[in-house]
Structure formats: C-alpha cells, structure tokens
Length: 384
Ligand SMILES: *Cc1c(COP(=O)(O)O)cnc(C)c1O
Image (cartoon, rainbow, N blue to C red; front, top):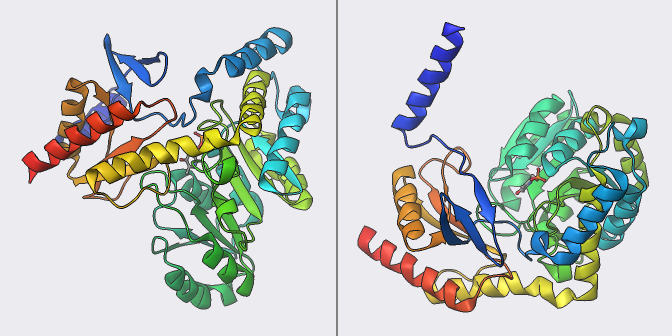
C-alpha cells in the first residue's frame, strides 16, 4: 500500500527531525552489570534488574526447570487451561508480601493496569492521575471511559482541590499514582494520598513497579507509609524480581472480580510457568536475605553524594539535560567511555526535560559508580 508506507515514512521523518525517533539496539547481558551492544561491552546503568536476579543461577534454574517440566508457554488464557498451579503459589506469595487478602497475576505490568482500571471504573466515574504516572495507567484510564483528570505531580493539595470539584458528580473515584516514579525516582506521598482517598471515598491505586524488591525490605513503597491504606497495589515481576509478568494485590472481592472481568486476563494467554517459577525463586532469595534489597538504594546514594544531587530515594536517579539532542549526545559520550546510560526523551518525559535516567543495581561496583559520576560531572561542566 503506497499510502500506508508514505504515512509511515512521513511520521518517521518528522520524528527524526526532532531527535525523537527511537531505534531498537540488540543487547546481550553478561555477568554483573555488563552488556554488549554492536560488539561493544559496556557497564549498563539502564537495566531495571535492580538485584541482578534475572541473572541469578537459582532464578535461571527455576525458569529452566519449569520450562522443561511444564512447557514453554501457557497455551491458553487462565480461565481456559492456562492457570498453572505455580500461578496460585505466586499469588499467595505476593499477597503475603504486600499484606493483602489476595493477588491476581497478569501477563505483564502493562496488562495489569490496562485490565484493572477499566474493570473498576467506567463512564460516570472519575479517575485522578498523577501528572508523571506511567503510560500504562493513562492507557488503562482511557480504555475505561471514565473522566480522566490529571493532578500536579506529588501534590496532595492539588488532588484535594480536584476531588472537591469532581467527586460529587462521579459515582466512583479512583486515584492512581506510581509509588516510585519510573523516570524521576521520587516516591509518592502515599500517606497523604491515602488520607484524602478515605475522606473522599476514592480508591487508591499505587503502581509499585520500581519499589517491590528494593524498598522496605522488598515489600515496596507502600510499606514506607505504615498509616497508608492502599486497596489496589499493582506491580511487576519484570524489574527487581528479574522475571516477567504483572500483578494486582488487593481484597479477595476485588481479585475475584478481576479474575472474571479484567479483559487483559480473560482474553490474553496466561503467564508462562517459567516466568512464575523465576519470580517465586526471586521472592525466596529476597526472603532469605532481605538486606540485599538495600544495596541498590545505597549505590544510588553513593552517586548522588558524589555529584552533589539531592539524595536518592530509590535506585532511579534522573540527570535532566533539557533537549532531546543534549540527552542523546550525553548518552553517546558516556557509551564511548564504556557506560550504557540510555537517553530518555519525550513523550516518555515532559517536553524540555529529556534526561539521562540512571538505574542502580546491586551488581554495580562502587568504583564504576564513581567513574560514572565524574564523567557526568565533566559533561555538565562542558555543557554549561
Ligand atoms: C515498567 C513499568 C510498568 C510496566 O510493567 P511491565 O511488566 O514491564 O509491563 C508499569 N508501571 C510502571 C511504573 C513501570 O515502570
């Protein structure tokens, strides 16, 4: 189709002109934090494998054994024949970790949010979302048909203003936020958000993709706020847990409803048994050695201290550079020095805030972190 290819070509040319085109780069991971791209080995500061568990021999063995014993795929949706017994083991473990009655595992974190949100709210309801929340929360909100309202980032006063304006006209209200913000590394004020939600009868959903495994002995950002009540605790198996898949922890009633109504569960193939087995092995390793969960944040703090940045509160540290061009140039220069730090550009982050997003893991050597900090200090000096 000539019009189709012309359309795609024009879109690509426009993205190229703004330095906003993205390209895949086949990447292999090696021991520790080493990755290989285009034949070049670098130390990666862009993996979300905060505890390096995707590479752990026991996690790999668990995945391999499950694949050998049970097959490579789940072969059907969970409601048909894809509900392998490992999935209910995993759900029990996740519910215990998060202190909820029950849990529901999905094919990915993206599928969890796009399944959970439209199951709970729809036309006539309102969903209030932190301005910097993850793309899949916005996608789930759009699918729901509810009125979507944005509140200022980490600003309970703005949320309160909007709840006062919007809550009365809506049947149900959902408030959704990242627990740890994926591109900024800061943490939502879950105690204040929870208090507002209780006062205005709104349901709080926290997406803790980047908190589980690395904050509060692995329990995640919600556990940093003992007074917070978070009825909807979403997360992923794909980051610190080193596997693949997503989940929602909540009450038995909510989980039962998801398992009969969430479209991304009903109409998508179940999580492969190997992914569930790997996540269970990771949860075992964390339970046996909870102090390992403190290492990524300690590494991030070594970096922020060295650069004089505000102290890190999660393993994610942004170095905002502004334009997409400057972020790409900085990333290229760091790659020349042997560090893979991917540039993050709009629309993943707001216009004018392109950045290096640095993710610290237990696999990083302190000496490499100091070398990276000094390389970035030099880049910032020459840029200013
Ligand atoms: C990565 C991420 C997701 C998506 O999880 P996947 O399991 O990778 O699909 C959802 N929310 C946040 C905040 C994330 O960073």
